[in-house]
Image (tube, rainbow, N blue to C red; front, side):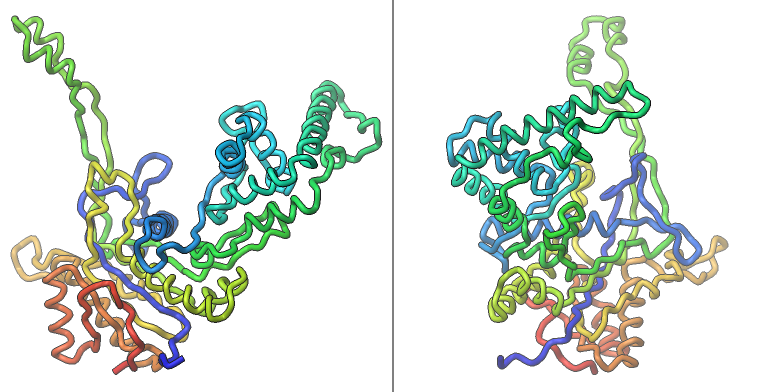
Length: 457
């Protein structure tokens, strides 16, 4: 290869200013928070960000857009039995009920646990989410169809054994010490006919990571099937937190009832109008504002290891790895959690600053904001205070200065590249570059935000 060697880790750092949004919330509907630097900060969890990024990249690839266009991607769901049953119906003409019971039996016998059969809402859902290639259900269905002569009798025997085990359980509930099964089996599992090995192998192969690039990026863990490969993710993501102290607004809202208002408008007397007074519904929603710092790292070596473990040659893994890196950076910058997107327009936010560089290890710059930014530059008496002014520009100064300080002491860092969608932050970048405080290369778009490695100045 003619390209210069690249460092193992690509570090991304981002500042974004959000106003009156609620991209993630706790079980009570309140914003999530953490305490850092002795004060409470708003928090957007890494889980919410990672899912937004993963789905953003998957949707672009499936639509034929971006660096991963046309490549295999994954789906994380509990509905693999339903996916398989749908493929049996649409591709092979099976009846729905038989397709569902067969798909569930085959996948369950492979090792995945399902919900309570007595509860229709969860009966055909696995108990855990499973991240697998999007075509796994189709592959399993095709195998079932190809071996239906063997699998239909096996399914009937499997379901009959399950029902017999359930009867024993119900019968034993009234005893203080349940009797062992009459046939001497030690438990329910021993009474179930095993899934034919060729079918189990086919299901495991279908559910294996294979060529799903997003599984190679974000990893997966399957505890229920020991011989189904787990994947150590190549992406590390931090929780985003506000660089200033958290301030929350509890917004009171009143929702109008159109029918009531129409009657009120058309009323012939004030008495009729009074009957339709008042809002249709009222309540509160919590909203947050602030400038947030977030950080992610891509381990290029781990990514290529995952791709090769999935069956790619070294050349194929390198090609897919480069494409995955480009799409990961795009998703890190462009994707946003969609909670309350319509009522707050949160997904339209653009980063104030993106800083990208390479190194021999990950670099997290959260320490730059351990001391919360004070946005008030004047004291209450009107005299100049110790504040730094608006958090967006103050945070950009801090982040760039922090990187310059670290870069002077860490020779493995490449020259950083900076992307901003804020003209005021662009002015800060140019000012610090001209004065020699930082040495960064400004870029105008996402086509090459990390760029070809340049030595740190």
